[in-house]
Amino acid sequence: MRVEARLHHPLQEALGGERVELRLGRRLSLKQALRMLCTAYPEAERYIFSGERLRADLIFMVNGVGINHLQAERTEVGDEDELVIVPAIAGG
Image (cartoon, rainbow, N blue to C red; front, side, top):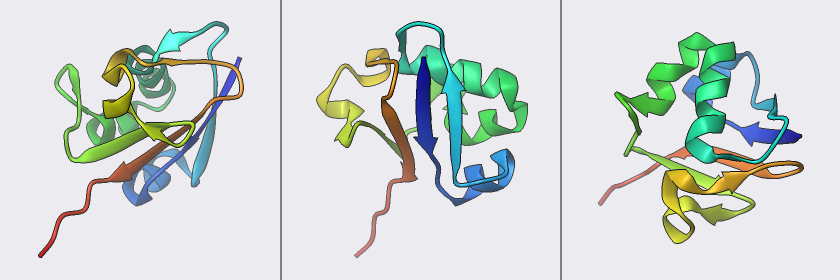
């Protein structure tokens, strides 16, 4: 299975581009898929995880829907899904 991840700027630098393809082999939770990504690219871990949790200052979207509207980090991803990781922007 192939999942395409679109990345925000610091992750682009860590992974060498604005997109990366994950080959999962089966449907996995978003958290499991991102752990696989970090196994392949260890420098990405600090940009994606804070300890065992996904970083709260990032927005994770699967097929255009924020994971907070799905099953959070348990959201399943698989073949042909698109994952977008962008910084949460706040301002006044």
